[in-house]
Length: 359
Ligand SMILES: *Cc1c(COP(=O)(O)O)cnc(C)c1O
Image 1 (cartoon, rainbow, N blue to C red):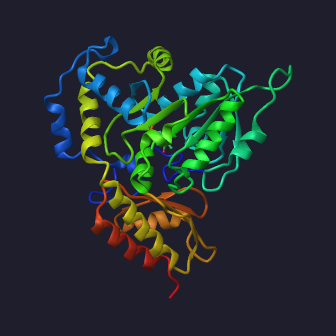
Image 2: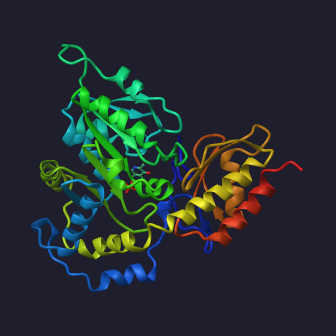
Image 3: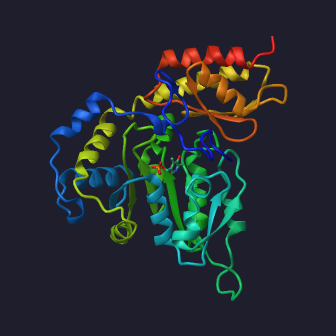
């Protein structure tokens, strides 16, 4: 599973390229930048940065948890959660296509000393029955202990699929009954919230910790939060310092995140509508084998055998001014976000019709 950039160091894109590679590519708007100018600042690591403290409180409240901690990235956030929940030698239950096992550079093994048991889900989502079958018996000399179950909402490589609330609750309940911790990788949790109208707190309920990311769909240049109980977050402060992720005048970045919570959430519906438009365009093209459901802002599809390879399509689209991602021999990912608009979407759809039709 390799991205378009696999193996080579990325360079600057041709000017004017509409970047549908990922929602992480969005740039802060002028208004967002201005929100940081007058933010009160201090040394965050000493608890003296009021803007970051406000963000901690606001996100903790949003998710119905006791406490939160600002982090440089969602990757560090996930990995600190794994390290706190588990003992070295434990096993974590996670979906095969998840960000945690595919795009975090092997950190669960290295930083937390855990191994993974990967479940084959449907569009990145697994069932409570699968979890129950995967949990290891306790107290056996030979067998690793299960330390954590991780759920990703929305699923990234599952095509932005939204876990049904009921299914998330059943998974959490099975883990809880077995005394196993649960972590919600909610890098795109607000996409699910805007799509379904179910609150972030409802989705987080029953999960011991949550990763909440600001650099994806919310359009910020920096930051994620780890959210959980007071005791859990106390431990996270120490691990963040250990990894060199301690922050100083981070209110400058936290102000951008506060701005995003006020201004960039409801607009996610536009991203979802545009992704839906791209998906339905693709469904009508004869060189497209299949399109994953595209419920939120991610469109994943497979090119048929008669069509170009994914790498060829990426190159052809790039020469027409569009960047998309190749994630496999025939698999393409397109992501809508605040940095691409309706006109970019219309032009991309027109170009896809040209490149993926036989007629
Ligand atoms: C991008 C992503 C992350 C990591 O985010 P960074 O802030 O770039 O480290 C974690 N989980 C999921 C599901 C993601 O899509």
